[in-house]
Length: 144
Image (cartoon, rainbow, N blue to C red; front, side, top):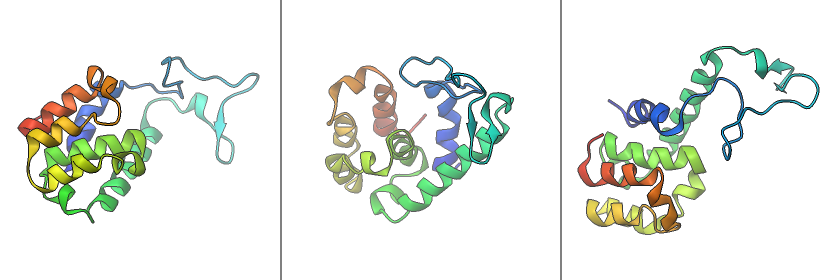
């Protein structure tokens, strides 16, 4: 199982799954004021139906993030399950957000998973009460 596959298993539980664009603060669907919410060259997001397009886009993004992170020894040395935590943070906040946790990367490079997990919420301790608590547990145990 790759880090991408491990994260894809967790994302539905962590994020939920909505077939239409939504406001991540409220979870409510986003609708165009008059017509249909569209994207690109007239692609109607309101009629895209099931997650076909979404699945392709998600996999593309995760593969691109994973490819970028492969250049970091702390990522490749973490094992796929722990690496999926780093991939998760990059997926939700971007690469720069993930790299904003230098102490977490430092401890991951040393295989010090207790301190790495403790640093998982170093930027915002309130995150621990939400979705970061399970990510800390994965860093500690190396298991999903």
